[in-house]
Image (tube, rainbow, N blue to C red; front, side, top):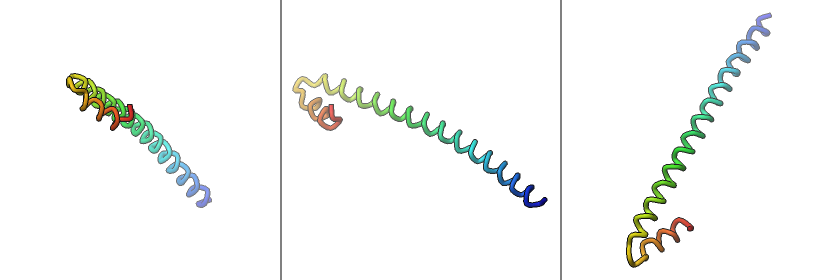
Length: 68
């Protein structure tokens, strides 16, 4: 009887741990998406500023660096 109780408690603990891990996964995905958006905004801002350079050297180097 105590074995069944122990397994039930363990199963319940694993259920809560799984739920917690799922919440962590969602939070990490949201953070990844936020960082990706931030990186893209910074990249675009740098390219826009580089386009203001009349020589085009800075923009050319940034495009090579960014793979554009």
